[in-house]
Length: 330
Image (cartoon, rainbow, N blue to C red):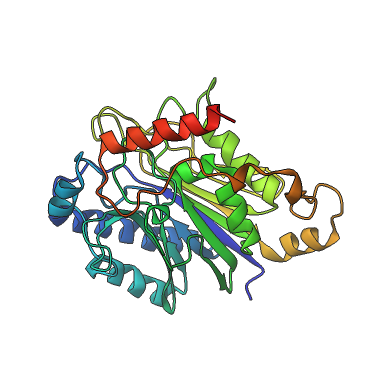
């Protein structure tokens, strides 16, 4: 068990790829960032966890599932994840990949927004975004699939502690992050493409506010990598970066200066101290203080599952409308 190590939140600034053939150059640059970060900080401390943003490999640049399948979606694992596996073995590190647009023969006609946790022994977990950014993301959520049998919120017990992950919009749902915490996570990773105006600047600094709040309300570390891509790369959105590491009391341990661009920030993760604090605390231990029976809203259905049907922007809007009617009729 490694009680103290450093985590790196690595933000990228790539142009939106038009085709999957362009993913390789992005993978090569992220592999370079991994090598440079580990070697550059080695005289000072060991960087053992490296986290990359949402859409680092491919952006959902097309509005239909069919076009995403044809142009950008890939199966996992693949030749890109093989490169990360080799680096994890070489350096004894753990890599939370930037997301891929994933196709899976087990779920024909669907595209997932997915990230892998890769360690020295290989692929440790796959996370598929549960709360897709609707109506614009036409990815499938595991929630849409009847009898989906894979773990929605996997947590992996590693030498770095118990690691969980969620993607971007997932973090606006405290229920999702709390589920990861109740699944045992001690470090929760955020793989994100959080754009302006909800990024790092006031008056709507949602990025920092949400990361700090999720950390303190679950007594976990948060390692959050955000896109740093400029407007010219992903119109009509720009992403301000601000990648950060937050401790279990909501303290910011490191944060990239707001503004577009490729940056890496590092900060210590002290798992031994976290475990001591969790064992010691009686006050402000919101996990043990949770009065589950007092909250009945999750017993009602709001956004209905897609049922495995073809997803498009129009039927997403219809589902949102029906969810609103449910909410307003209460």
